[in-house]
Length: 467
Image (cartoon, rainbow, N blue to C red):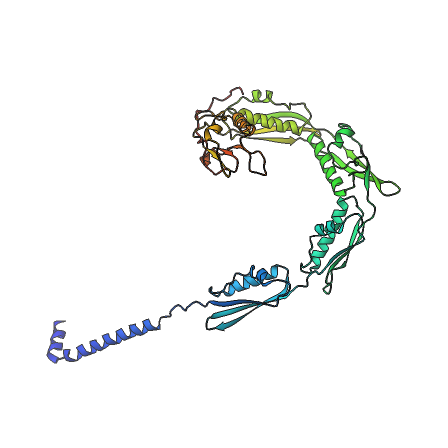
């Protein structure tokens, strides 16, 4: 290395190495500046200079612009324009929607060209005597000026038929005379009403567990007052009555019950006798009742509190009442979130079932802080007025029955509105403990989400307690 340095110094090479190095440095700097000058810069955004609408006649420009998101002086977005086209097409008012763009010094001019659907110029009803034009027009859902759409016209025909069938004209037929062709300018319906049919009598066949009078309380199809007011035949209502009778029998344990109907008209065709044909089937008996998941209370003690017992006929009302009783037993000891469910289990033997109550006890909870939320335009009731009507105090074991009693006292105080049209009535709301605000006391309005009771878990009672 030292020999090479001596050679460079002795030979005078430094005189030509230094200029070469300087030239290379200058060349590198020029290349860097050129690369920087060639780097792409972000182009300026293209703005929308104007938005125009052409081709509309029946539809105003303001109505069309309510569906457009493309705005003047905003950045032009081709995807947004395509979405505007789809929104206009989905209104059903236009056969075709196209767009044109024009570049100007100020930006892009976007033009929406629309081809409107033919509109309904008139709506007429022919042959109607039992129902007025006004009632039929309101039921049809059509209006003059709406787009001429054959599907909408056919839907209107169906609605008119349904209206007639609900008004005692079950044989009414409605046909479309105009409105289903592209050249039509209006909608015309031809109506063959048929006779107005009224209910002469209602009969039941096959019922043994309940009398005719009892079954008549379960249905809505009945003769009119003095056979003049009401009592019109409504086949949809008759079918709904079949479902009501079937549910009534199954609530009493007739799970295989079947109900049919028979219509018997007089010679005039204006009066009909409705006969409900009932096949009750076997009535199920509760073979055994069990309570599962209970640890705090003794199972036999809980069974003694139930209304429905082993050997009784199944009754849905009694089963629901027993669920509420179990809920109150647990809720009265602070288990306000106990989950109790009834599970009827059918057996291989016909007409028998086992009834199992599944209990998820949860934990008992005490009351902590109480907040009162009073809503209204000018609330003036003091919070102490509400607190004085509560039978729960901080530190008390929360009793669900006392919560309901407090709510009843607030409603009966006449200090707050109980009319749902004016606002929600007073309410004491219980919430899960993980939400931190367990109970909200709500007066005149919805909850503002403020905590009312902060849950505190006391020592759990010993297992096997008597309820």
